[in-house]
Length: 476
Image (tube, rainbow, N blue to C red):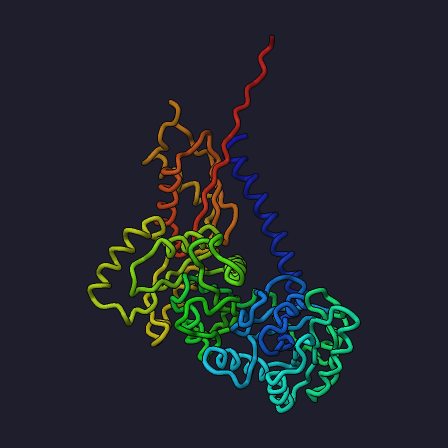
């Protein structure tokens, strides 16, 4: 097969694949209901099983669960489906209206969730009975004027159902026995929630993709939640000097630069997952899952401190997942001239393997240069979706190889016969070769590709497909 016919066959294959993918995407967009969904807020005092019940409702283990109070701190949203109807579930931290300090701030997040919800799922613990905190929450819910479904949780057998009758004293309706842990009567509870929900509007949008997803990642206490709050214009995520305040990923739709973006605040990534225990371990897994469903990762680094191995490991993790990278040096307002000089030296030395990562200097606390994030994100997304025409790619490689041939390996010089871009998001290139190309030469090709075509802020993957030699059979 000649190079011309080979080129033509590859192009036709990718055209057919691309047309099929576009048709499937349009069909999925037509079938999806993109209108706003009704909201169910799950509230209750600490450690009554709210997150366990949320996991039962959404049908998967998303919310972090541990048998100690105070694991959930922010209000966290999930999408659920029951009997063909979709709705949003908001998990909240333990709510004690009379709490102080950190507990008070967690309670304020629960209060906000109640104000925004269409239906409130009030979760109680029948094994403890009615407490002063339950009565205080019930008083607030009665004043809210919203539909309330009262879940009597931890009813694992018929004997416990009798104890649920004591919850009538809360004055907010019929207590419905359920076991979030074992799933007992959870279907009946979901039926009641659907009956209380308003009808979802039949609003539809075009086949365009939804808001672009940006994950805010970094080690603990670098200012991820502060940045989300600054972007959202409200205290959307809980902020505290104590490291590890955020445990569940927190999604927020933010209007910036005339566009709607979905920012995802994540738990701080610590040194090693195997060193974590309990809620911190599962929070780390949630952070990785949030990174997988994002398109851009804004990696926050504390500019007032030296770069650490942990910062570099987080950036490597983002690159391995194939997401766009914007490195945001936060707390820039705390950096003096001397520190800025040494920081530039650290960046040049330690980020030498990813010089293509876009960088911005910001202060989440004061809002300084936060407006520079969106242009950097948009530029990275453009690079992430860039496709190089096959003819232009091969013409570029021909000139490159003539000027700098691949190094000899085993006495033979491998040849690059043909190249094509297999996919985008991230850009992936396949080199059809007659032999193995050294890692250094592939990195050289990547560097020159970036110089020629850009790809700022986006990882680029280059793989090889080595041609197998075929020997014609000789007559014996």
